[in-house]
Every structure is written in structure tokens, then in C-alpha cells.
Amino acid sequence: LKWLQREIGFRSCRFHALFHDDMAVVRRGPDGRFVYQWHHIDKVYDFLLRIGLRPFVELNPMPAALASGEQTMFHYRMNVTPPRDWAEWFDLVQNFTKHCVERYGLPEVRQWHFEVWNEPNLSAFWSGTKEEYFRLYAEAARAVKSVDPELRVGGPATARANWLADLIDYCHTNRVPLDFLATHLYPQDEFTLYANRAESPFGIGEFFTQRVRGARETIKSSPLPHLPIHWTEWNTQLATSSADVTWGANRHVDSLHGASFIARHMVELDDAAETFTYWVASDIFEEGPIPNAPFSQTYGLLTIHGIPKAHANAFRFLDCLRGPRVGMDIPSAPAFCGGVATREAESVRVLLWNDAPPEVKN
Figure 1: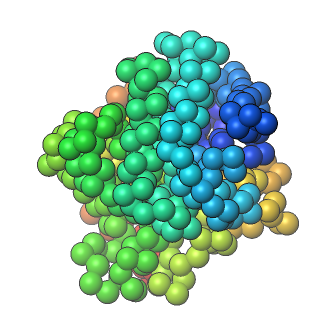
Figure 2 (figure 1 turned 180 degrees about the vertical axis):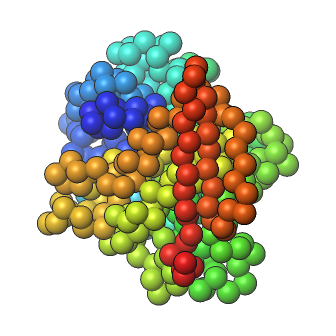
């Protein structure tokens, strides 16, 4: 994280497992009442703020003291069950939010985002129903707002941009606070939605762009047309067929093509969202054990030894684009090729890319 901040400079950091039992945030005392302890969260947040990263707060998983079940997932065993008592979930979120305000000050915390859960539309991440997630969201949103009405809370943090209109309608109908939408997308999602791209309405290489822009249009046509949208998980996991889809060892996160994907889409979609949060910073992260090779086809921008991948260098190039954009014409550019130019004082910087998808032979 220090290297990424020194070499690139991101605004915020999102991560799983804030309320994991390893963080020891809550236990039930002999009298049945909760005892809260924020020490480990404080260490994490103190460090992030010290290096210039604001927390993009992900409210999950369910602590064992509150959980209705024992279902977990991934290497770090995130509890994915609803609370057994909704009032206790409200109390946890409210007390956590109060602590953040007391420790870091209201002006600082008002600049954070509180996101409720992670990918509840996937049964592996949420054992409850869609309706139970909406209640989980409502309790958390009201808990955050009970501390200060100007704190920002949102969801549904879904995979594949699902449930956006549904959450808007639910919040609008039930007067539940909703300050922003958050959702996730990966380019290989196209092959999970459309077998081998059969019946896909998207041209080759256009799925990611069109889904992002489509989400913005969904918001514009909703009862809350001005909501911001944050893409809080995405990366360059690609596939050439449905059989090629893999979430564990995807060669494209270690490839040169992934860098061109980042350059192209971060430029072309700059006006389509408030945030794009690349998942993740390092190949050392909690969803799996530490890889046993430096280039292990794991998600990170940096390897386990801190070596920057092509993806990290793409962000470094983008960070060099200082000043306003200037018009640039590339006559007869091949498909998937493009560029951007910026001017700062007497300097003009140009970044070009060839982002032909791996399924295209060129």
C-alpha cells in the first residue's frame, strides 16, 4: 500500500472482513450484553489515513456473537449468515460508526463511504434471501444515519451490477437512506451470463464498457436519478470461452493485455462513475492462502514480493496524465486501439493502447 501510494496515489481503500472474529470487535458478556472493542480496526484505519487512503467501509461479515448460522466461505472463513436479531446488527453498526466519528472526527468521516455487505446476490457470500439483504441494508443504513445524517451509506455491493434498480425502488418506497450505489463487474462475467457469448447483446470487447454505462442509465431512469455509482470491485480477469472462466488462477491478471484493458477503460469510462476500485492491491490477501510463486495469476497489482505487474504500471502511466485533455485524432486506428493526450503548461503527454481482447487474433 505504501508503494502504491508513493508511485500512483489512490483515494480510498476497500477490503473485506472488518467485523471478522479475528478483528475481535464484539463478544457477548456473561450477562448477555455486548462488549465492543475497536483496537484492531483502529490500527488498520490509522495506518490507511496516515498514508493518504480513506476507508471505503465494507460492513461485514457477521460476527459469531450475532450470527444466525455457521456458513462461511473462502480461506478466511467469512460468516455469511444473517443476524439472529436485527436489533443487534443495528447496534453493532451504530456503535462502530460512533467510534469512527469519536476517533477521527465528523468532518473526516463524512468523506467516507459506508457500503453494506459484499455480493449478497451470490449465495456463497450471503446465505439469506434478497429480502433479508434489503433488511440488512435498511438496518445498517439507519444505524449509520442515526450517528449523523450527512454520513454516506449505500449498496447493494452486488456482483455483475445486479439489484441496482431493485435497491433504489426498495429504499424509495420504504424511505430507507441511500446515498450511493455500489456494485462489481469483471470482464469475464460476460461468459458466465452468456455461454460462449451466444446471444450476448454486446460486441466483442464491449461488455465491460456497456454494462458500466448501462448502470448509469438505470440510475437516470429511476426515482433517484442523481445517485452516484461506485464500482467497488473490478479487475482484468478475462476469458476466451465459458470453459476458460476461472476466479482462482486467471492468467490475464498477470498479462500485458490486462494493462491495456486498464488504460483503455479508465480513460473511456472516466465520466461514467465516481469510483473504480481495482481488486486488489497485492497477491497477499485474505481470500486465499499466500501463493507459492511470484507470478501466480492472483488478483494483485503487486506480487507477493512487491514486484509491480503490468497492471500497476498501467496505473502509473495514467497518473502521469496531468492537466486537461486535448483533442487527439488517430486516423485509421485499428479496432481496440486508442489513446489520450493531456497538456500541462508546455508539456503534452500521450498514452496509446492496443486493447484487442484475447479471443481476437491480431
